[in-house]
Image (cartoon, rainbow, N blue to C red; front, side, top):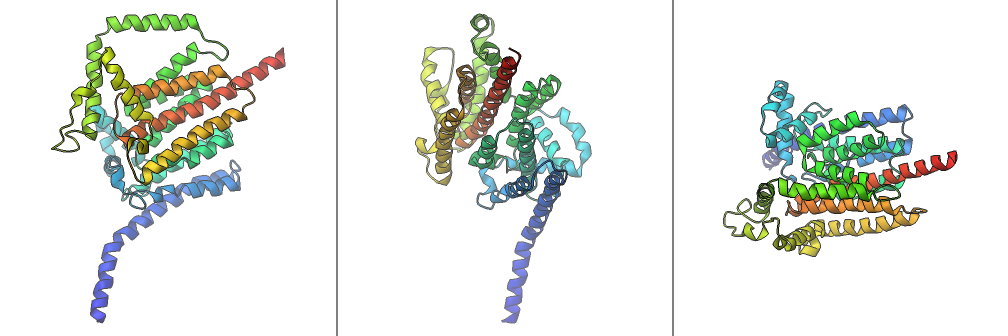
Length: 402
């Protein structure tokens, strides 16, 4: 009997030894990153309460990736983990990145950032996840100290489930979100050189997000704080109308359909099942009135919570709660403002609406939709309140000198 118990004990150690080593590595990374927040406290940049909250919210990566959720829920993490490990072990491979294809290049560049970050080990996904979470929390602290984030928005970004998820896993989404937030910061700080670096990074890693920035820049030029520049709007509209006839519109739509079909097949077709028979032909878009129902259907699929579309489970319920909470939060913040500037509100609402509309034409999968919606949503929330803040400062300065 004693021999049998010893064999059982040996088997337990063999089974769990890897887990124990992984936990030690992950806790090591956690404590290493914690030193940054402790340093900020020691130098009186943050208070004791912010320190405790930071160390607490830095633990969120331990909730995901085989804790409460399987890593297979977000399988793209494996690409960043493997590449970061290879680059850490073979730093000279960085020189090979410029020669990679466009699709691979964006993964390798992000992986290089992780490879040379203060991550002790790439044995698990949590090393990269902890680094992602740390730089997200540090960014919130930075914007809060710069008065670009008020306490309400800090709390919002900390408690939203989708923000917690995508800033606590080993994906590039966290870097995309932070890039968009820093674009707003550098734009209003008029630091255009650093903004060019942000644009370059987005161009390499997720060029789709440049459309969001482009929409903002156009609308920001047309819609001022107290009026709409109809002359500029007319010029842009005529330019767009002429461009439709000058540019080979069929080639443009063919490119869009190729991208759209790839995402469609990933969700419904040959990528998800060999026996799938779902036909993409009914989902094609072109420059005709027959495309309007397809666009409306795609837009609804993009903005509607998954539970409304028939999905059941804990995640769709959480998504519905988040969707409802954001609507409540929007009305709550509007009521807090003494006077809502309708022009600023209208501008940022259009940024959200048009950005969602454009991206809805591409993606179909609910998780992929969330990965596109989240950066846009945070860009709009952050950008709107920063815009309001600068408008108030401008009005205060004007009244002071009058």
